Length: 147
Image 1: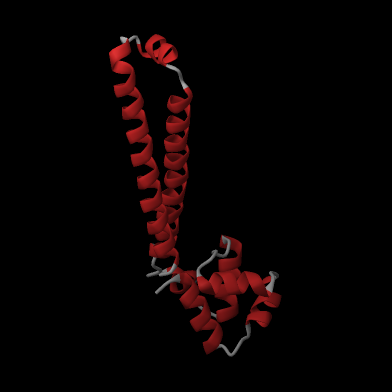
Image 2: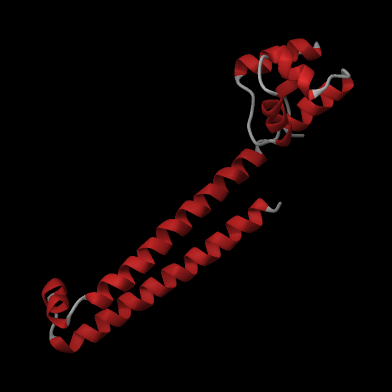
């Protein structure tokens, strides 16, 4: 059971509305809604106050609380950040190498004229693969939001 589910359960058992909990704790009703939905978590001080309101121990309130929701959100954000970085790197490598002339490529990489097209193609393929990987990560991120 998540912390939000526990807060909602104890609130319902005590016949309290989200508005009343918000008033007693000293937060907005939207904060209570976010706690119950798992979008955020109450501070330690607010957890103590909630335990007092529900007339339970802190241990009862927080023991057995699943942290998977938070872990999944962190993984989702990591996927999103990785997707953005990969997309930027892919576009950057394709644009930069496509706009370099053969002499710049030869000077930058220290190769002969025959290797220029191989290097250009390698960067374009690598950039394309980075963009595809970014799209896959972004799709995984979106699927994770729908859970």
